Image (cartoon, rainbow, N blue to C red; front, side):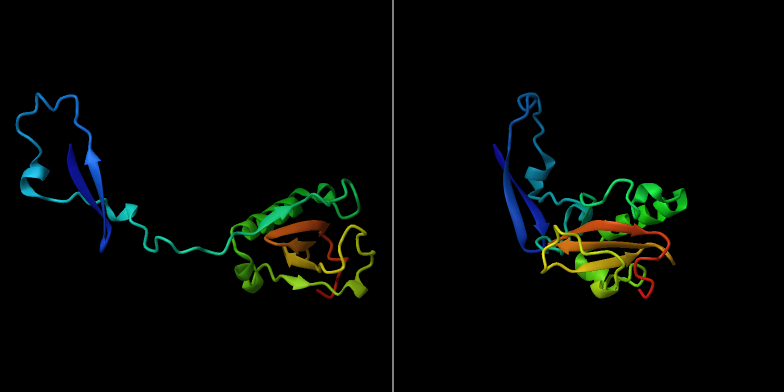
Length: 165
């Protein structure tokens, strides 16, 4: 068995042992790489630019707390509003929370719960804040965040829940 060296990035080389091929007894020429002492290097596309950099985790969305056919349910929206909501949620899931916080299109904001026309859901702990994101000019999606998950409560396609926001 031969030992092959792979240079993963400058200064980092890994050695691997080559298994003998089935045709090794028939191949009398030998490997040109072994004769010339060259190292095999992967293409640049295989070498990560920052091999161990950890990005902030992406946000995710839960619709567990939406009341089916309730006043602010997505099922009562028209097709353009549904498309706007899905685009907004897809955009959220492609970003980390620090990125969502500064995104000019989503405009994540905390809702003043004293100005909401409905009561705070009973299952919601006091420490959690209701906030909203902008799906379109008039369409807002309300929910609360726990860790990396945005739990949707209401889809406000008419901008009536919190007109000031």
